[in-house]
Each structure stands twice: as structure tokens, then as C-alpha cells.
Image 1 (cartoon, rainbow, N blue to C red):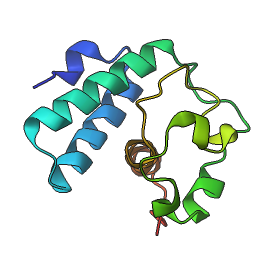
Image 2: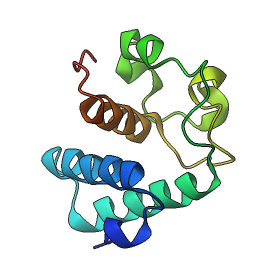
Image 3: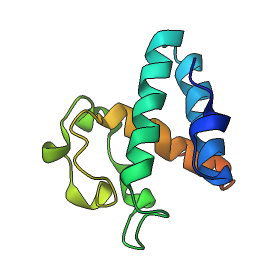
Length: 114
């Protein structure tokens, strides 16, 4: 299993990755699947600007029907949700949603996703 404390570049991202790991495991992802997703998140984090730009709209994402974007490639997703990511075509909407949930938990926000 990927050790987040050794790979995340800072404390805030390490905590987000830990929350994503917990969320994936709670949703029944295997240890191997969880490790693979987390490795991709770490690689993405290395290439991404941090924090996301001001026009990154978590509220807009949370009002969208989540299933509408499940399994879409990045070129099919609304661009304003993925501005801070580089060419990560593997990054499916369902994993991005888990990442946003982790951000909300970290920031003490209410989870209001469908």
C-alpha cells in the first residue's frame, strides 16, 4: 500500500490523500485499487497548481448530478472543474468527486453531493 506520509508533498495534501484513501476503502475498493488511485493522485498533485485557482467552483460541482459525469474522460468534463489539473486523461469523475469530498471534510464543510 502506498504510504501517503512519504509521497504527499505537504501536510494538507497528505491529509486529503488520507481522506480519499478512507473514502475509497469505505466504498469497497480493494487495497490494490486504492493504492493505484492514490498513486495517480500523488502524480497529479506533483503537476498541479496548489491550491486550485479562485474560479474553481466546488459549489457548482456539488449541485451537479454526480452520475452524469461518472466515467467521462477529462476532455468530456466541464473545463472549469479541472483547470488546475494537467493532462491526466485517466482521472475519472468518480475519483475527482471523492477528492472534492475529502477537501470538504478537511475544510469542515457539509457534504451535499447527490
